[in-house]
Image (cartoon, rainbow, N blue to C red; front, side, top):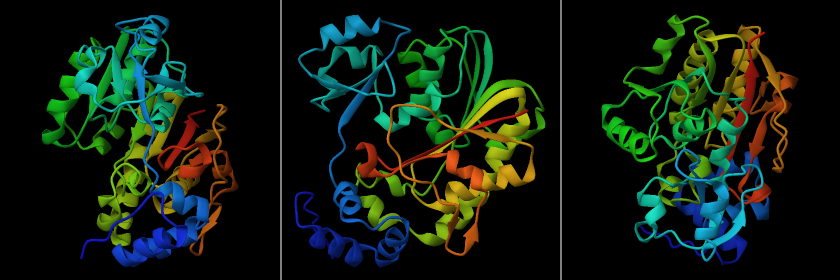
Length: 317
């Protein structure tokens, strides 16, 4: 049975649609937030955003050339802009790799990685490459990025995006990301943009309502802990590891960060950006987490009008 969701509809109708389509998800969302604004924004269409690729053009020049479609700036990313169209095939700058289609919240992880030219950086789950290309531009194409993904089916799009954006320092590998734990103290920084249950991406595609299953989160949480631990082992002392997901599920967010904090000497740092989040969970569904997870950034759709997102900035002493 197909259920129509009207993003402009009454909030009780929106709640009712969630209950019908996926009652398990609806009950989980009630525990995570459950406010009227939360459910309204969960189905509100996402604003279209792009990032200017400074490997190919200056931000000011692109802003001037695209002034007719730019409708605002992304406050936490100086290269990020909201635009009025998603017909990217009609925008030459997109075809040329001068701009990259990227959700605004997704721009946050590379911004907080403290990237500099000459670094050696690990992107442990890189495809399709939005954050990888952003990392490269902050490094000014100077250094080395190991851009890894476990699935052969995703490698072609990763390589295509790196080439289109003029990334010259990307070394593409096809490994289970946990493999990199053997390279102790080798990288200056690492990104774990982990595979997740996509609960935060319902705004982008309503099919995620139907696809979400709680049982999947248990396996994903285990995988995410392994990926984050491997990335942490791989960075040098003083190095930064950023963990991010596009889900709202605490089992995949705060619980994963809590696992690293309790099993290593990792330190967590507050993310200081002009972005409004909600309080991270220090306990959820009978589990208690380190109070330090309050320093994580948890974005619900209504908090900054983005997809649901989670970011943690960690440092190896």
